View 1 (spheres, rainbow, N blue to C red):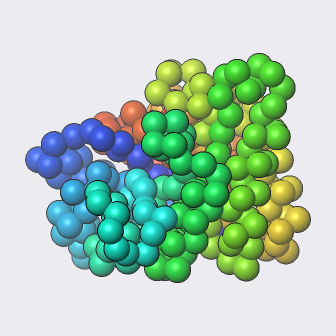
View 2: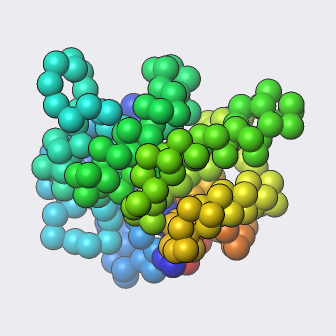
Amino acid sequence: MKQLIAGNWKMNASLAGSETLVRSVLDGLKTAPVCDVAVCVPAPYLAAAQRWLAGQGAVHLGAQDVSQHASGAYTGEVSADMLREFGVRYAIVGHSERRQYHGEDDAAVAVKAQRALAAGITPIVCVGETLAERDGGHTEEVVRRQLAAVVHLNGHCITEIVVAYEPVWAIGTGKTATPEQAQQVHAVLRKQLEAASAHADRIPLLYGGSMNAANAASLLAQPDINGGLVGGAALKAADFLAIVAAAR
Ligand code: PGA
């Protein structure tokens, strides 16, 4: 399977800065990358980003969240169908920052994945343990519980999802899981997906958490790591391009 490198810009960059970043990434990809590439931009920039990305096939557009509701009186929410209108190909769901600051639980994340799938958008389902959970020996139990909710609701089309393992203690901290630590969890997730589908080998498992130009190659070389969800390093074109270049 092709690896996937997805930039998660979070709530960063002005509109002008975003355009510069997208254009620099596109310039750097004059020769088509061997992996899939996506940029998950802030929602207000989706229309502009769709224009910047028009007419090329190397970089896909992604959103950082999607509403669990189809439509209606949900002030501030953005539906999967709305995202689809802007050519959105991927939507991050269940990022730890959404779970932590916006109270999203496993059930809500599963419904978000379902909404995205129904709109033809690939959900990038994030799972990951906190430092306390890791120190308490609960890493596997936590990520399995988080993924199980999504599998339970979306079992029939589970091969259409992407999973991102993002240990919370590694996000934005400069502390990366070692390739071995990440691979260990990825193997657990792969096994769980294999129990749900005979084609689980088609589901990309991304690693996220302080991935950068220096550590990407060793992480991406692990057998069950099929790409990266990149935060901070996705805000600098050169760093993001170096990670794309390290992917297969
Ligand atoms: P980071 O963020 O690369 O800045 O650690 C990754 C993420 O939160 O998706």
